[in-house]
Image (tube, rainbow, N blue to C red; front, side, top):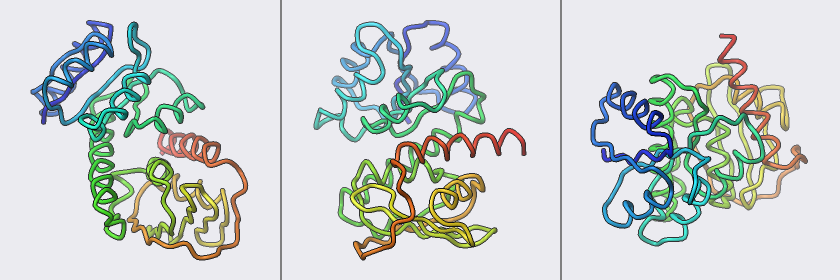
Length: 239
């Protein structure tokens, strides 16, 4: 797999290349900012871009927007690197088209998990593009529930996300890409989303549809996703 590592810090690029090498990814090209990265992307095919956010000339968010605005680069997955916690800015870059993000500092195991997640999103995106949304299925340890919902939001999907975990079954309803309802065991609404995200394991299958439902989630989807991410990571730290 050919990876483009983008960061204005030479030290950060060296560290990232070293970690990628430990994970078995040796075909890595470096770019010192978004403009350099965009030129390299236009000259050759890359399978994954790992980009820092805060850079001169063209920052990570602007790079993602430029890529998504180009027919040739629209489908290249981007993993954003940021020192920020879960904020509106993180959701902004995800909505702009990043396939995932990882917070500094991170371990090799963290990066491995995020690369798997980003590539899974890329696979799901291909299925949506060929209008095979019924084939959207997989494991929650490959792509977390918040990231999966964010993906459905970006694609403005309608339907039910059926969830199966060791702790029980559940469902998340989306309409026009927005969270409308959820259940997990006896839990309803946002609490159900938080509990599924906290569990972090299980399987999912997306069932397209636009049936009438009883709304149990009134909060903005972005707010629910940020809180779900926080609670999931808190559960991981205390496990």
